[in-house]
Each structure stands twice: as C-alpha cells, then as structure tokens.
Length: 293
Image (cartoon, rainbow, N blue to C red; front, top):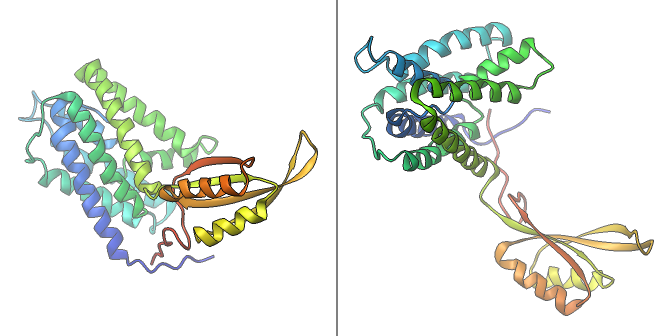
C-alpha cells in the first residue's frame, strides 16, 4: 500500500538541519572537550582527534573524520542497496560534517563532566530525535550495521549496532581512561530516553480496564459525563467460570480522577485497572500526522 503524506519534504529536511545542528553542539560543546566517546562515527572521530594531537595541531577535526569514514560507507550502501537508498540519511550524514565544522567554535559550557554528560545527553537526544522523526539517520554505525547485516543475515541490525557502538565507547577507556567512558555511558542512556520520548510522543494519557456487573451503567455515565468512547470486551472469570464484561477506556491524565469517581458511584464493587499510555492517536486526542514522500 502506498503511503500518502501531506507533510512536505522540506519540513523533514528542516528537522534534519535543526536536529543535526543540535547534535553537533552537544558533541563540540560537551562530549569532545571532556573526552567522552559516546559511540558512532563521531565517537571514532573523538578518539582519532585524541590520538593525533601530537601529529596535527589540535588533532584531526571531527568534521573531517566524520566525512572520511562515511563516504566509503555510503558508496558501499549505494552499491549494495541501490541509488535511491537513504537520500535523507545521505543529506543528514554530510550535513553533520558541515555542522561539526561551524559549531566547533561553540563555547565549552562546563568543565564538570557530570553536567556535560547530562546536558550533552539531552541535547544529543533532542537532535537525534528530530533526525529520526524525519525518517533519517546520521549514517555511521547504523549504516555500517545495515551493510554488515546484508552479509550476516541471521543477526539483527540493532544487535550489530549495539556491538559496534559498545566497542567504540569502551575503546575510549584505552585513550581517555575509565572515568570519561563511564560518564559517556550515562550520556548515551540519557540520550536514548530523550529520543524515545520524542519518537513515542509526550502526549501521555491513562487507560482504564473496568470489570463490573453494572458495565452498561458505567459505560453510559462515562460517555455522557466525560464524552469519551468506551469499548466493551467479553471475558471469562476463570475462578467462577462465568462471563464477564470488561470496559476499556482511554482518558487524559486530568480525567482519570473523574472516571474513577464515576465507577465508584455506579458500582463500588467494580474492579478497575489503570495504566499509563505513552501516546494516543485519533479523535479526541492527538491527530495523525500525514506525510508527503
């Protein structure tokens, strides 16, 4: 089935430009000055810069190493996967080198490695989250993992990426010591959480499962007083071997108190399960995004 998108392609590229710039600031202002190797090709670039400090004044620039490593990776990807492979990723990868160049003079905001790992992780997560939300990547280990998986088909791309990134992160121990590497791990953990929050959405809601013999009354009261839809499910009580009706309803966080009050008044013996919902799409909640490929 062909996907029809109404979001213009230039919006995706804007996301990439902003996201890559934020990522480059995190690398130049937090990670590189404090020798934190956070994986990926930029992590390799930080290691190479550290190793070449005595050969080149200031070491090899991050933007140059990023470009040199990613060019052959993309050539291989085009050969293996075709000419149309990853236009957005190609743009994001090379724009990262440009962004690393024009943000290399961004001031170092702190010399406290803990603050750098926390705020660097947040910035990197925001930047990568924007890039990923534009159906793109910044090349590097995810691109390398995709090429390796083409040969070793029984191993997932995610697992290969984990192996590659882990090797890069912990190779930083040999160059910069264990402390910087441990803080880099903290930063990676934070950035992953921020990426998840951006991609999964921040529109948190609550879901309620209600088991009651007065299910019709409860459903009517919820629909009339909260103006929320209710779905009826048929279950079976395994202890009593009798049919049970289960109501399923999703409400906003501020409405969950009212919902529990409705249930309590309608049937004080009702069994209610409330759980967190990460994101809800559809009428009454967040609208679907439409895309234009």
